[in-house]
Image 1 (cartoon, helix red, strand yellow):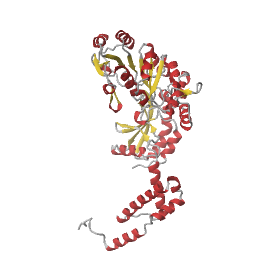
Image 2: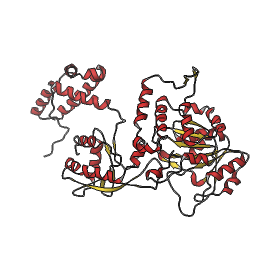
Image 3: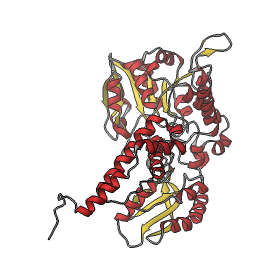
Image 4: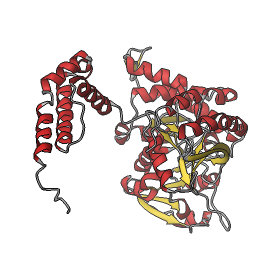
Length: 479
């Protein structure tokens, strides 16, 4: 005979249940225990009281179900403390980025250099001369902290800074083509992560998009044919997150600048990620540099600060002085500016580029991208055995070759040889991999890898602290 779960418990079970309910400590008793443990002093009495009540509600529900529960006030105070610790923990938790994507947008992109972190800490800890000219004693401009540096590093006449490259493009387009036409090649109407599309930015900037050419081929005559009395700008976009190959044609910036000068409109050259140095000198695939774009004559060049440049989130606009002056008086500029903390970190990052010979020593992004495969493979060999012990016989762990990528839309088809650890279930069960990935994400410092082809791969290119990784594994609990 089957019992109906809705039927009341037997008299004996009911008596045990009532006994358990009577023995649940009061809120006051649990709070007294939390005071002895110093919990309320850390989190405040109000938060501690709310957490204690939550713990007692959960305990009461467990007793009603007939589950064994520790009713000691000290044990319940300990549960209260753990609940408060979980609630107080920042959601912006440091993670081990073992995805193989160095500049991972979802994981915060560039890791800042030590000098940038020091500068940011000083700026957030003290009053600083953000918009104050110490020589004259009068109001200054926050852009002045990086303007000369940017001009020195790019060869531009003038420069300004906003909070990201999308903002830089938006501001430049709004300044020169609001209510007018912006001409761009159809093959350069990019979309990047988060459904950011160039046509949408152009619409928000208030300009009318005029597409020229075809997806794979655009000629100088296409631009000239589109120019008219309503033309505000010509826009060139570096397709940094994809490539069109085969039967292709594009108009280089040098020729586009000549066309723009004939039409007496600015040329905006959006480099996207952008780099201040030739990456080939570090053994990486080549990307056009900002200095090259400026030398090709574009009146305005825009690029990011938190991608290949290796700094905090920011967007730069460099170019001709008269055009930058117009951009700087646009009311949108104030809405898009950066704060003192990021500005301090940006200045410190840019100064590192004055010594490109030591860039891989001092800039984490460049050091990680240029890290030799042999060095990473040695790390994989050292970690394979300890990881196998931590995972137990359910999983097989073996060193492997793999391919890293830059990320954040830079060098999209270029892969960087790397090494890592390949983990797969000993019995070939697919569900075990998802559970393992979840367990690694649940660690005090989450470990993020990539899954595919029946395995979880931990690309070790970005792993710089082996000891911290191994210590973290001691908390692994496989689900």
